[in-house]
Length: 157
Image (cartoon, rainbow, N blue to C red; front, side):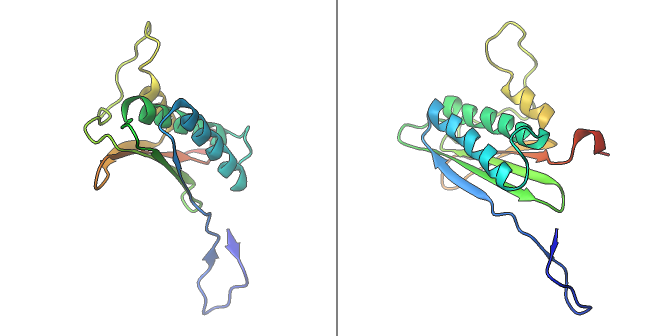
């Protein structure tokens, strides 16, 4: 979105969406709060809670935060959430960081487990996100990230 008046000597200025950065207790309650805060920030960015973009971000945050709590928990350490909106590309980048460097997600989502009670989280992330992966975090831990489109699925090329 352009703001202000543009003269021939000026470059257009884009509105910058303030990223969300927060720490949460590594617990189910912390994961739930991360999802709720993500939905609130999406609403501040102009995506109502019932919109496809907000629902997709909520699901991806819920899965990544739940994985951080279940598989990346280190006693006494929180997990971090960062959301950033890139309006120009129509992407929301979701990053969930935890302190467990040794427990990295698989390079590809696991195959479906039809009879199990768990194991589908990364499959869901893989379907909902345009891209996802993980990077080491220094001095300790890892960041699992995903990029979600804010463009309605019917208009994606």
